[in-house]
Length: 300
Image (tube, rainbow, N blue to C red):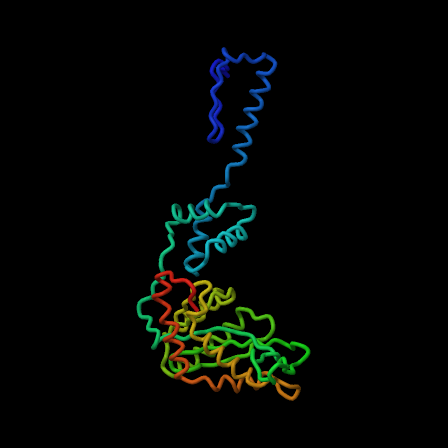
């Protein structure tokens, strides 16, 4: 190594040492050389791990299944699938754009989608025995007191399907809902649609993890139906949210007592949802679509 004009470059730091002007004692020369070699080795060890074609293939398949997957979730799934893989969000995004040729675009409706004719909405929600109105009557100056169960009781999960021509069906889910339960419900929905000559409808679901299962999508595709997923964090785009609101509002009208059963109350409240209601919720959700494309904030 020539120390007469020593140039050290490490990262963005550059330093020029003139050995004639600043003489260095001979014993220190070997120490400097060892230190620089150590720095070079450290830099090599700290180089970020590269992503290879097998990683790109995994990511392309992931976005093919769900194009609405957010960046952080995609990176997490990649690191879970390939052990000991670490990459920053910035590097991950760069790899997706340059190596996978995938970019983020504004969502557009698939060809053939008509909000008021050929699609149905599937979603689930929870109920419990302490559902009650947020307001009640009392004498002026006195706080309002409403008697409810001291215990919240068992939660009941209901999965339902609404459409432009009314509600399709509702089903009570057992504890520990899995993709199997969603598949079973979807088969019931498609059986009803087949009876009414509605084959080929678009089944719209939210971003619940179990609904993205290959088994759910495969079953609907094989029956001649198509599956669409809502963008993340967009419940206001799903008309069935209005359906759940009305059902829970009917249950809240009078608090449950020991003689009441929650399940019959839910079943009775579901019957109060009309075709006019469903069509109104669809129009309301549809009015948000263009506003979402314009990236308007505060939608609900």
